[in-house]
Image 1 (cartoon, rainbow, N blue to C red):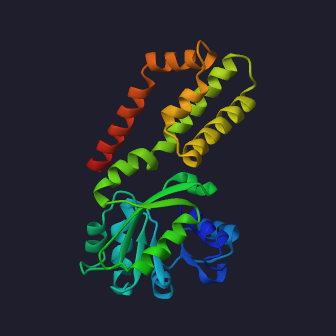
Image 2: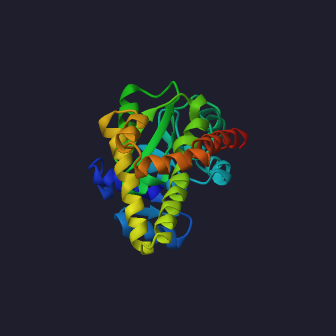
Length: 255
């Protein structure tokens, strides 16, 4: 995800490679990051915090406490810190970074950021200025879309966008399996299924029409589509998806 953010920053012209510094613990990871984006990568987290005007925390949740303890004395309260650490609230971040009020932005991105089509929710501490918020939006929009969301809804964000690419991948795989059973070569089946999902999603976003209205436009009387929709409803697709989203949200609250 850090690589997707860096690529978006560079693609959007928000900074040059020479203006970005990152850290990675392994030599292999550093070499990969340097090759992908031409930035400076160091094994030293403290150096990054000293040199960067804006610091991104993009570590796994289980390593956050260790990294925070290492760098907190190098992060003054007026330095903007943007965290994409899953499941860690603004209050958690503030406590781990010393307890003082800080300029913190919490972001929940998703994996389509890797192809420039991410959906990111973000929330801010009271110390973040409007200018800094706008700066964060420019970065997030460089690899997709973003929206300011109350932190109390971040578990719902996890369920509807953070985890949902996995649901869509299952749906694409299932559609492709159906096409294969009808005689279509598998590679072609994946292409047709994935492109159809992409196109349908763009129709929702770009037309502004309700998904139900768009569905009705495809389902002609006694046709093939309404027969497929009837079977999906009979098999409980809508209920299964709703229950999956709710279960994901509840699990997120537990972590």
